[in-house]
Image 1 (cartoon, rainbow, N blue to C red):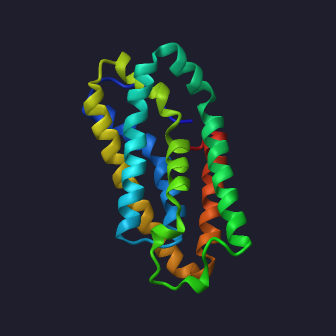
Image 2: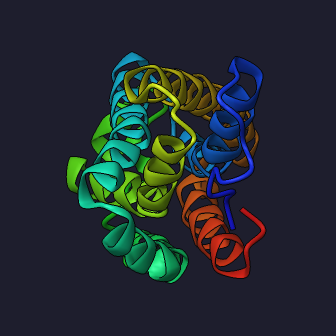
Length: 198
């Protein structure tokens, strides 16, 4: 699973490494979202939601305190993985029954319309829930929490946007199967989180 921050010193380089490690799952999930289509509104929504969750969860973890943050952190991998897999399965089910968009939607449709805000928020929560323990660890290392949140949020935003663009390129080649592939990618991210690969 993701590093808990216990081994990182309060240096900028270490903080950047933590931020990249935390943002990798967002990058992977953003690829899955981007496959279904990307426009400016999609970029803003995904970037803001993923960035805010990644930046905010460590602060929440620090506020909860070590005991509760560690307790939640130990189960976070399974909570996040379950939410991601469930979200992907729901998107897959919608696509297979013809309610999730597809070839008939047209190439110029609003990509954000294919990803309901509720599903996006759930995905952001699932990807960041294990950051609760990270927040307390960063606090223990005397890293300024505001600085850490800003760096983690910015890196997550950047990785998410890169993932969206990469996903969009894949989506252009997969055509009307893009949303189906996107759902499968999201399920794959959930499995990777469960196994500790992300």
